[in-house]
Image (cartoon, rainbow, N blue to C red):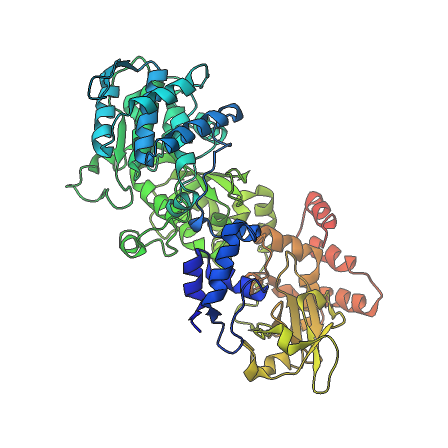
Length: 637
C-alpha cells in the first residue's frame, strides 16, 4: 500500500495541512491507525473523485482559495445592473478562446469604441482592422498594449463585445474594465497576489475627505486606478499631479485608460508605471530612475495587497523593520519614503493589523514614524473575504525610527506590554479607561507566576472516558471552569504523561494551590483549585507568586466585571493568552495581609456580600466616571 503524509496530501488536494488533519479527524479521510497519520493513496483518489463529481460539495466550499478556479463578479465594485453585462463579455471571450491578456485587450478596444475614443474602418482582405484615434494618448497606449500582449485584433470578437455595449449605460465614473478584469482572474490567483479591488464608496470617502487641489498624489499599488480616478474627479485636480504604480501590467494599462477617460478634454500620457514598488524602486540610490519620488507626495491612498506570496528572503534585506513577511507591512514602510514630511497616508487594511501579535512589528513602526490621525472599522467589504476591514489614516512625522510618537508617549509602556496593540487608539473611551487602570503603581504576573497548558492527549477518544474507571481521575475542560470554582467534571482520564501528545510537568497540575482559566473565551473566567486536578488544553493553569497577594484575591479581581471590561478594551479577543494576562495591572495598594480589597473579597467568599461589592470598590479605586461605571454594570459576563 502506498501512503501520503499530511503535507503531501494537502499539496496534492490543493488545501491546507490543517484541512487534511480536520478531514481525518471528522472521518472524511481515513488514516492508517498505526502509521503516524499516513493516508492511503486510494483514500486520496476516492475523495478527489467524490469532490469532482459533486458528491461531497461542502468540501469544495472549504477548500483553500489558492486552489479555487471560480470567477467572482465583484458586486461590491460595480452596480448590480451591470453584472449581467460583465458576465456576457466574459462569455464572449471564453467562446473566442482568448487568454486573459488578449481578452482584456480586445475588451478595452470595444470599450474605447463605446466611449467614442476609437473608430473602426472596414476590415481588409487579410481580416485585419484599422483604427482611428481621437487622442494620441489613447493611440500610444493601445499600440503599446498590443505589442506587449502580441494579440490579434479579432474583428468578430470586438464586434460582439461592442454589440453587448449597445443600448447599455455604463457610468464613466465606474471602473468597468477593472470589474471585468477582476471577474476574469481566477480567485486563487487573486489570493496569491493579495489583490482585492476596493469598493467605490470606500474609495470616494477616503479621497474626498483628504484630497485638496494642488496635491501630488500617489497610489503605489494602483490596480486599475480607482483611487487615481477618484482624485481626478475632485475639483481643481490636474492629471500631471496623479501617479500610480502596479506590478500587474494589464492593471496598469486599464488604470491609464481610466485616467484618460477621466480627463476627456486633455491629451496626455498618464503617469502610470509598471514595476514592483517594493523591489524595483530604490529611493536611496541616486542612480535609480525613480529617485525623484523620494519625499515627493502630499497624499498616498491605497489598498495594499494582503497576504501576497512574496520573496521574503529578498524583502527582509530591503525592509528589516518587517519581521512578519506580511505584504501590507512592507508598503507601510515604503510609503513613508514617498511622502513629504506632514504628508498623509490612507490605507485599507485587514482587522489583524489592530492587535494580532504577528503584526506588532508594523504597529511599532507606525508609532515611531507616523502620527495616527484615525482608525475606522469598515466591516467585511469584499466579496467572499470574511475578515473585517479597517481604514487607517497616518501622517508622516519627523520622528526617528524606534521612538514612540509623542501623542501616545503616556501609553508607551502599555503598548509594549500589549504587543503594540492599537485597540486603545481605535476607541477614545477605551483609551481613557486604560489610562486610569495604569495610573497607579502596579505589578503584573509577568515574571511573577508559573504557567502551564492543559493536557493535549492527541486522541481524546482513546484516552478520555465519560465514566469513572479504576485508576482514572476527573479532568476539567474550559466549559467546566466557573468563576472562583470548578464545575462538575464530565470526563475522566488515566494520567499517563508519556502517552500524551503534550503535557506540562506534573507538579504544576498537582500544585497545592493554583488558578485555572478558560483558554477559548472572550472573557476572563478563573477558578481556584487546591485539589491538584488535571485539565485539558481548553483550561490552562496559572500559579502566581506575588508576595502579599493570595490566589483567591487575584482570581476574584480577574473575574470581576471591572477587569473584564479592561481586558476587552485591551485585547478584544476570543482567546485568553498568557501574554494578555501578564499585562493586567495589580495595584501595589492591593498587596499585604490587611487591605480593603481583601476584606471585601473575604466577605464575598463567606457569603456576607455579593460579588458586586468587589466591582464597586474597584471602580471607585480606579476613579472611573459614572458613564464608565454604567458600561461595566451593563456588561454580560
